[in-house]
Amino acid sequence: MRSAVTDKSSNDLSAAQLMPVGRETVQDRVYSELRRALIGGMFEPSQVLTIRGLADALATSTMPVREAVGRLITEKALEALPNRSARVPPITIERMSDLLRTRILIEGEAIALATERMTGPDFARIEALLHEWDEMRALKQPKDVDREVTLNQRFHFEIYRSCGSSVLMPMIESLWLQSGPCIRVAIYAFSEAGEVDTAQYHRRIVSALATKDVDAAREALAADISRPFEYLRSKMLAEEKLREVSK
Image 1 (cartoon, helix red, strand yellow):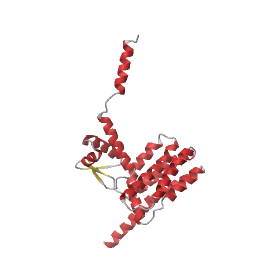
Image 2 (cartoon, one colour):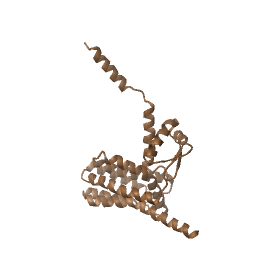
Image 3 (cartoon, helix red, strand yellow):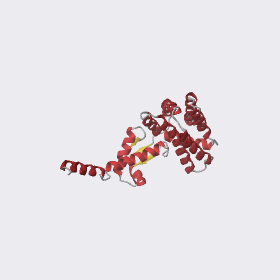
């Protein structure tokens, strides 16, 4: 015969397991979706985001959006503006240099750890991503840029997840939150310049991983990460020089 204590514990457990979806869950989902969009470069630098506009796009109320935006402002992924709005931080040379140095340091350690841990199935997944990339060579429409940004993020994180560090991954995600919009602008710039075969940089990374060459993996990653930042830096310096000359 079951005791009253046992019955009560069982009932309490059932109640806990069947708790209705609350406001906190909606907030978490909104935050996760905005975070995913920022990491994937779905928003552009200096883009203004209104609470109402985001709420309409996410089909939710303004409260969870406001709280999610507040969290992202704290994480330096967004900047607060008046009138219930925020913006993606603008690109500056100083900001890009800081992000680049930190990404090479943190992501370089992650890929070094992943080099010793990646297995056959891991390589199969990143090769599948490179195959998708090969199918999308020329960037002619905005949706193509969206696809390349997504593939680029998936490629890198597929590797980083193999590093085995639960500490490094949140740090990397935070860096991508801040640099994702820069990557998007760089992809547009590469397209305008006629450079479409960007997969070569990823293939160098895969080759280094396949031979378990840690130094080569770090170097290939640094070259891949540096390329968009250095390209944008040169472009911005050239535009700044033109403005000075035209004064």
